Length: 270
Image (cartoon, one colour):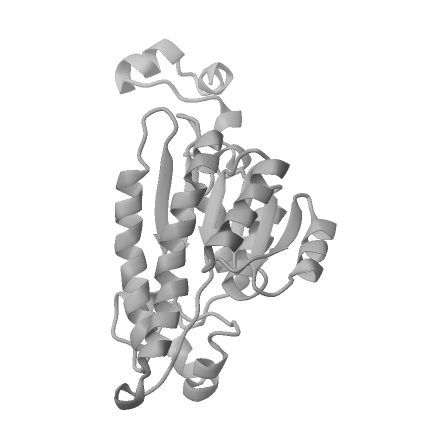
């Protein structure tokens, strides 16, 4: 700060007097310092494919220690991300709708790392069917994974998140919602849209419940639009990518870079 101010002919004491604050050192304002995740332990549910894989790739590229979990083994993806570095990625098979499986997942993280800096609640499912024939069983299935599991895992992970949190750098919960939770989609995704609206409100409640002056945990929600993913495959096929692109402000569907950027920004130091 002193060198920067002097090189511009500004006396540091005069700057502070005039502005009421001191400029931080340049190193603290560099992107790597402001948005770095190097060394952070990050859990991404549903991280083996789609948006979860995009976020996991971004975190790993930032130097984080990433764990992806899901019902299917994602070891091949984890190995590829680790090879690409500079972070590492491990895959754990876990069903986050199951209490025993959730406990085993968190116990493994506790044993291996002792703390968790970032929880990305990305796992989700969808069910499309006309209202007249929409099965209640499908509604419950969507709600169980998209809402109940987010609540249960966030609550159970809180001690590990607290262990990583500091006043300067809180632990983070990032919930993946959807633009369909705040708009009326043209297709019949009753349970999915309602579940994503619920995630948005759940995030507000969790943010309040997890607030702590000494070991804070922040909670944010990302609301993606259309992205190329397995879940969106049917919609892209039925509606057409061009039509979906026209419905967005940028005139295109999302790219991996977009989710990697959002997924890396929210867990970064404030």
